[in-house]
Length: 85
Image (tube, rainbow, N blue to C red; front, side, top):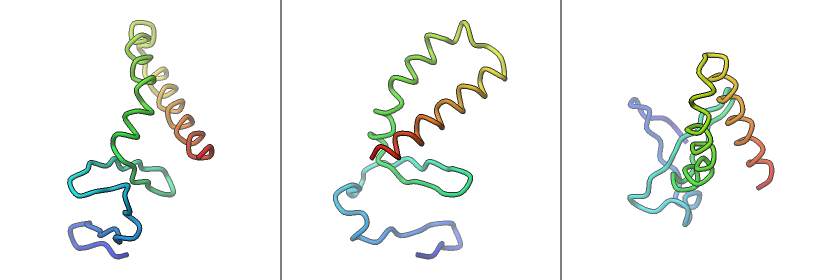
């Protein structure tokens, strides 16, 4: 697969399968050594609980250190989810 001058790529049809249909939305998750393209509905479903928790703790957590800790927690949760699949 090659990138165009605009940074575009074409995902081969046999890799898209039934996961990504025309018009569907996807999320790109970037890591330090790779990226993942996931259906947006999957990502939103996995983050639903985390987002609810973030709102509940917003009054208690209000510092850059707390924000970084939360980001690390979300990243770790995503990594664990990938290993379970």
